[in-house]
Image (cartoon, rainbow, N blue to C red):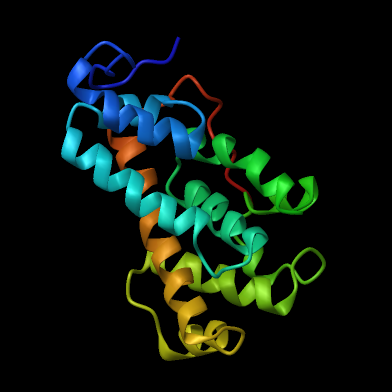
Amino acid sequence: MTLTRITPVEPGSRPELAAIEAGIMAERGRVSLLYQVLLNSPPLAQGWEQLLTAVRNRSSVPADLREMVILRVAVLNRAPYEFEAHVPHALKAGMTQDSIEALRNLQVTQDEKTFSAKERDVLALTDTMTRDIEVADAVFNAAKAHFSDQQMTDLVATIAAYNMVSRFLTAFKIGHGHERIKRGH
């Protein structure tokens, strides 16, 4: 059993939430523990679903890079629930199990055997946005060299949005029944 710091709202238990739950079901196929906690604030749950649906399902960033970013943010922010939730999406997007496991290594941005130059530039941007907040021009420009303005906007929004998700999850200890993410060397 997974404990959280706040009581999740059981789907179907509050009739006034039916429309929001239906929207979540339509996009996600289920009302996960994350959304059950979010349902404590109906406006936030609804807005969150709209934002994250745009980030995940309507983005111009290729799915494999999007999932790589999401997994990396989860590792950096120690959010195992998020990591485990996105492994199936990453595999479906074409990431290998080896590349998924490599994301756990804190020095992954130098891993030339596993990641392409483009992927390493995206990971450097992800790491910098997550750890340092401010992004040096050299890091930003290296990533931007691979993308259109829309793709770069979508990429930065994805990194920012999943920092929000992972920090929400860790603050409420959502999914603390999951194995902790093993931090690399």
